[in-house]
Image (cartoon, rainbow, N blue to C red; front, side, top):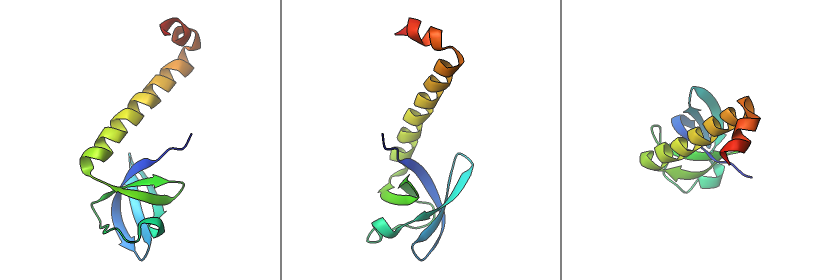
Length: 88
């Protein structure tokens, strides 16, 4: 499964953006979306260190809501694997 993570662009230098999500900071390549107008304050979808799409703030928030639910569900399953089987 491939996973893209929404990140907030904090600064840009050439094709490199310094981005943040949930307190994690990463340098991200903008090379794949070089024809898209991206500036600090924008959100981008990041996959393996590359921004692959610019996102509207609402799209980023909705994606994080789904990811948070998935992570929470996974944490519950790891904490109580037998309980997860009973819930199915």
